[in-house]
Amino acid sequence: MRKKTILNVLLIILVLAFFVTPLGFYGKVLLNRIFAGTPEVITASNRIKLPNYEWKLKDAEWNFFPFEKSKGNVVFINFWASWRLPCLAELQSIQGLYDNYKEKVDFYIITNEERAPVEEFMKKNKFTFPVTYLIIGEKAPFKILEAPASYLIDKKGGIVIKEEGISDWDNTTITNLLENLIKE
Image (cartoon, rainbow, N blue to C red):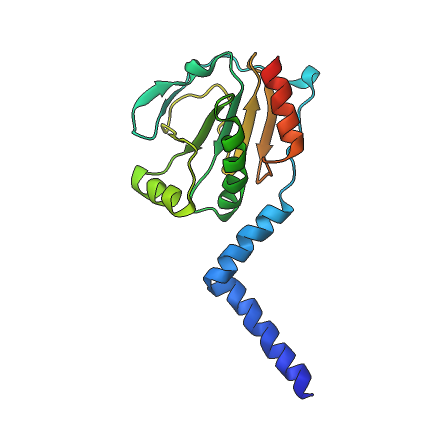
Protein backbone atom coordinates (compact mmCIF):
# COMPACT_ATOMS: atom_id res chain seq x y z
CA MET A 1 0.00 0.00 0.00
CA ARG A 2 2.80 2.42 0.82
CA LYS A 3 4.57 1.87 -2.52
CA LYS A 4 1.32 2.52 -4.35
CA THR A 5 0.74 5.74 -2.40
CA ILE A 6 4.28 6.95 -3.09
CA LEU A 7 3.91 6.20 -6.80
CA ASN A 8 0.57 8.04 -6.91
CA VAL A 9 2.07 11.10 -5.19
CA LEU A 10 5.02 11.09 -7.61
CA LEU A 11 2.64 10.82 -10.57
CA ILE A 12 0.56 13.76 -9.28
CA ILE A 13 3.74 15.84 -8.80
CA LEU A 14 4.89 15.00 -12.33
CA VAL A 15 1.52 15.98 -13.81
CA LEU A 16 1.46 19.23 -11.83
CA ALA A 17 5.04 20.01 -12.88
CA PHE A 18 4.02 19.51 -16.49
CA PHE A 19 1.33 22.19 -16.21
CA VAL A 20 2.76 24.80 -13.82
CA THR A 21 6.55 24.82 -14.19
CA PRO A 22 9.03 25.72 -16.94
CA LEU A 23 9.77 21.99 -17.21
CA GLY A 24 6.20 21.54 -18.37
CA PHE A 25 6.51 24.31 -20.94
CA TYR A 26 9.59 22.78 -22.53
CA GLY A 27 8.02 19.33 -22.28
CA LYS A 28 5.01 20.58 -24.27
CA VAL A 29 7.31 22.13 -26.89
CA LEU A 30 9.16 18.83 -27.18
CA LEU A 31 5.89 16.88 -27.53
CA ASN A 32 4.76 19.27 -30.27
CA ARG A 33 8.04 18.69 -32.13
CA ILE A 34 7.80 14.92 -31.74
CA PHE A 35 4.25 14.79 -33.12
CA ALA A 36 4.80 17.33 -35.93
CA GLY A 37 4.58 15.61 -39.27
CA THR A 38 6.00 16.37 -42.68
CA PRO A 39 3.70 18.68 -44.64
CA GLU A 40 1.85 17.27 -47.63
CA VAL A 41 3.14 18.28 -51.05
CA ILE A 42 0.50 19.35 -53.58
CA THR A 43 0.88 17.49 -56.87
CA ALA A 44 2.00 19.62 -59.83
CA SER A 45 -1.37 19.25 -61.59
CA ASN A 46 -3.27 20.51 -58.52
CA ARG A 47 -1.10 23.51 -57.67
CA ILE A 48 -2.81 26.87 -57.61
CA LYS A 49 -0.78 29.78 -58.94
CA LEU A 50 -0.53 33.08 -57.13
CA PRO A 51 -2.62 35.65 -58.99
CA ASN A 52 0.07 38.27 -58.38
CA TYR A 53 2.90 39.27 -56.08
CA GLU A 54 1.28 42.52 -54.97
CA TRP A 55 1.74 42.54 -51.22
CA LYS A 56 3.43 45.02 -48.93
CA LEU A 57 5.25 43.88 -45.78
CA LYS A 58 7.66 45.26 -43.18
CA ASP A 59 11.17 43.97 -42.54
CA ALA A 60 12.87 43.60 -39.14
CA GLU A 61 13.64 47.35 -39.08
CA TRP A 62 9.98 48.13 -39.91
CA ASN A 63 10.80 49.35 -43.39
CA PHE A 64 8.15 48.65 -46.02
CA PHE A 65 9.09 46.39 -48.92
CA PRO A 66 7.22 44.65 -51.74
CA PHE A 67 6.72 40.89 -51.86
CA GLU A 68 7.23 41.25 -55.60
CA LYS A 69 11.00 41.12 -55.06
CA SER A 70 10.56 37.34 -54.63
CA LYS A 71 8.92 36.79 -58.00
CA GLY A 72 10.82 34.03 -59.82
CA ASN A 73 12.30 32.61 -56.59
CA VAL A 74 11.39 29.68 -54.36
CA VAL A 75 9.59 31.20 -51.38
CA PHE A 76 8.92 29.83 -47.90
CA ILE A 77 6.27 31.67 -45.89
CA ASN A 78 5.37 30.94 -42.27
CA PHE A 79 2.79 32.69 -40.10
CA TRP A 80 3.60 32.56 -36.40
CA ALA A 81 2.87 34.14 -33.02
CA SER A 82 5.29 34.22 -30.10
CA TRP A 83 2.54 33.43 -27.60
CA ARG A 84 1.45 30.20 -29.36
CA LEU A 85 3.38 27.21 -28.06
CA PRO A 86 3.12 25.15 -31.30
CA CYS A 87 4.73 28.05 -33.16
CA LEU A 88 7.84 27.83 -30.98
CA ALA A 89 8.18 24.13 -31.73
CA GLU A 90 7.73 24.72 -35.45
CA LEU A 91 10.12 27.69 -35.55
CA GLN A 92 12.88 25.45 -34.18
CA SER A 93 12.63 23.26 -37.29
CA ILE A 94 12.30 26.33 -39.54
CA GLN A 95 15.57 27.63 -38.12
CA GLY A 96 17.30 24.47 -39.35
CA LEU A 97 15.74 24.87 -42.79
CA TYR A 98 16.76 28.53 -42.90
CA ASP A 99 20.34 27.71 -41.91
CA ASN A 100 20.62 25.33 -44.88
CA TYR A 101 18.74 27.34 -47.53
CA LYS A 102 19.04 31.04 -46.65
CA GLU A 103 21.04 31.73 -49.81
CA LYS A 104 18.73 29.78 -52.14
CA VAL A 105 15.18 30.37 -50.84
CA ASP A 106 13.36 33.59 -49.87
CA PHE A 107 12.13 33.22 -46.28
CA TYR A 108 9.17 35.19 -44.93
CA ILE A 109 8.66 34.31 -41.27
CA ILE A 110 5.65 36.55 -40.66
CA THR A 111 4.06 37.82 -37.48
CA ASN A 112 1.51 40.53 -36.76
CA GLU A 113 2.92 41.34 -33.31
CA GLU A 114 4.71 44.46 -32.17
CA ARG A 115 8.44 44.75 -32.73
CA ALA A 116 9.73 44.80 -29.11
CA PRO A 117 8.21 41.48 -27.92
CA VAL A 118 9.24 39.80 -31.19
CA GLU A 119 12.84 40.94 -30.80
CA GLU A 120 12.87 39.64 -27.22
CA PHE A 121 11.38 36.30 -28.34
CA MET A 122 13.96 35.96 -31.13
CA LYS A 123 16.86 36.72 -28.80
CA LYS A 124 15.60 34.39 -26.05
CA ASN A 125 15.24 31.47 -28.49
CA LYS A 126 18.42 32.28 -30.49
CA PHE A 127 16.56 32.44 -33.80
CA THR A 128 18.48 34.09 -36.64
CA PHE A 129 16.01 33.91 -39.51
CA PRO A 130 14.67 37.27 -40.72
CA VAL A 131 11.37 38.36 -39.21
CA THR A 132 8.76 39.87 -41.47
CA TYR A 133 5.89 41.91 -40.09
CA LEU A 134 2.40 41.65 -41.51
CA ILE A 135 0.58 44.88 -42.25
CA ILE A 136 -2.94 44.35 -40.95
CA GLY A 137 -5.50 44.96 -43.67
CA GLU A 138 -2.95 44.77 -46.50
CA LYS A 139 -4.26 42.58 -49.31
CA ALA A 140 -2.20 39.40 -49.86
CA PRO A 141 -2.06 37.22 -52.99
CA PHE A 142 -3.30 34.23 -50.96
CA LYS A 143 -5.27 33.54 -47.81
CA ILE A 144 -3.56 34.61 -44.57
CA LEU A 145 -3.76 31.52 -42.38
CA GLU A 146 -3.98 31.32 -38.59
CA ALA A 147 -0.61 30.62 -36.96
CA PRO A 148 1.12 28.25 -37.14
CA ALA A 149 0.74 27.88 -40.89
CA SER A 150 3.00 27.88 -43.93
CA TYR A 151 3.22 28.08 -47.69
CA LEU A 152 5.96 26.91 -50.04
CA ILE A 153 5.86 28.56 -53.45
CA ASP A 154 7.80 27.50 -56.53
CA LYS A 155 9.59 29.82 -58.99
CA LYS A 156 6.52 30.01 -61.24
CA GLY A 157 4.27 31.13 -58.37
CA GLY A 158 2.65 27.74 -57.80
CA ILE A 159 1.68 26.81 -54.24
CA VAL A 160 3.58 23.58 -53.59
CA ILE A 161 2.63 23.30 -49.90
CA LYS A 162 -0.19 24.94 -47.97
CA GLU A 163 0.05 23.69 -44.40
CA GLU A 164 -2.17 24.68 -41.49
CA GLY A 165 -0.88 23.67 -38.08
CA ILE A 166 2.54 22.63 -36.87
CA SER A 167 4.90 20.78 -39.20
CA ASP A 168 8.46 19.50 -39.24
CA TRP A 169 10.30 21.48 -41.92
CA ASP A 170 13.85 20.29 -41.34
CA ASN A 171 13.75 16.78 -42.82
CA THR A 172 14.89 14.93 -45.95
CA THR A 173 11.50 15.08 -47.68
CA ILE A 174 11.48 18.88 -47.56
CA THR A 175 15.20 19.08 -48.34
CA ASN A 176 14.76 16.93 -51.47
CA LEU A 177 11.70 18.96 -52.51
CA LEU A 178 13.59 22.25 -52.10
CA GLU A 179 16.55 20.97 -54.08
CA ASN A 180 14.21 20.03 -56.96
CA LEU A 181 12.36 23.37 -56.80
CA ILE A 182 15.63 25.31 -56.83
CA LYS A 183 16.83 23.39 -59.92
CA GLU A 184 13.65 24.15 -61.91
